[in-house]
Length: 260
Image (cartoon, rainbow, N blue to C red; front, side, top):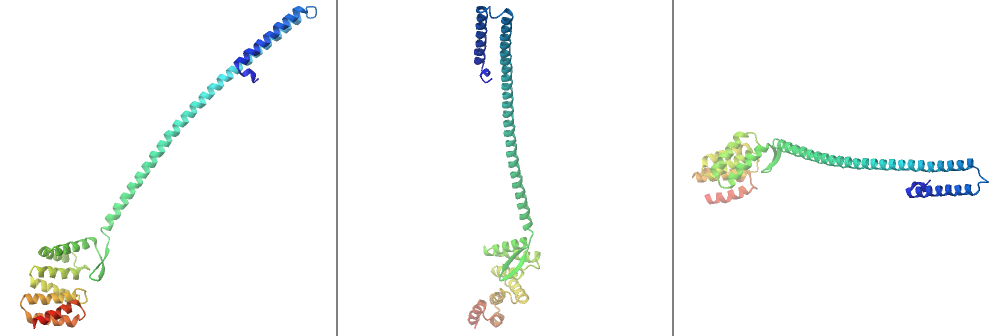
């Protein structure tokens, strides 16, 4: 059967069978005495049956081969279609992954923005002049802005900014420090009486504040500028007695010696 799968082998086999039939015919005619007409006819019929069988087998195998080829083509087509669908699905999956990544980035950006906005309203811990306290972010911003004006030499603007700060944040932990810098801004602007008043408020309200000794020295300086030497001497003596180990007391001693 394997040999009959090739068309060339089919034709070879057919020729072989026909040749065998012819030889049989010759044999029959050469030996008429041995074989009768009936036997010759039977031999021919058998030969035809064999030829028909071979032809039928060849036809069936040809049809099977054609069917196999069609099946292979259909299978190949299905494979190509599956490959195309797989590539399409892979592309869709990659796009979905990109979309998910983009969505996640957007969510992170939104969350970051929300956190930043919330932090604008959350109290922050600050330390100013040795005092640690919680402050509103806007409160911290306003104090630092007023202090920046003072350090830039814009004393009238700094005085206005510190006064505005204390009015807006009356209970602020920055209060004593803001009062001190307000007095200094007024002193620099030669508003000695206003400066002296703010230094006194600081000294009386927060005598243990880190800026209290400097406030006492600043009061004496205002009094000297106002030509009130007697009051200045008394203020310096009180400074030296109240804060003997402070730098302001050392400066007060020198100033007191110059007044005598």
